[in-house]
Length: 151
Image (cartoon, rainbow, N blue to C red):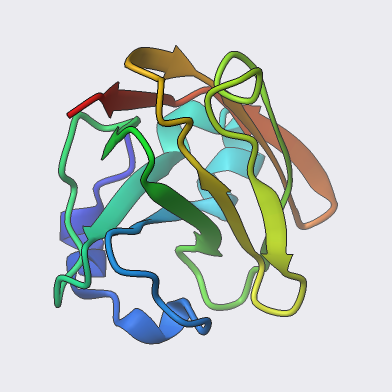
């Protein structure tokens, strides 16, 4: 698993999300070691999720490595960034169990690469999804989870 703390990415600034923050939203930063993924052919061991919630001032890993915790009805925003500033990463699509009735992310801003979706208010439980990404002409995907608490 990509060690985001060793990389210093726990203090990634808010300016990576250039749109207006909606109160109560969960911002998910998908951090990818593009060199590691390309050389190994394995994205799962070269990706980490970092989150910020409710306008909090800093980013953190709030749940297990590839699980995002949220509440029913909450808005979730995703953005993919490379570990290396020499690479570029783009989210192509979301697929899987989450997209089928729990949350269907759409690309909110083509220029910033932010995808956004709202968690179905009646959802409760753990749902797997797949994120398809492209970097350096390589298309790869990984399968994280979203854990929805209906409170």
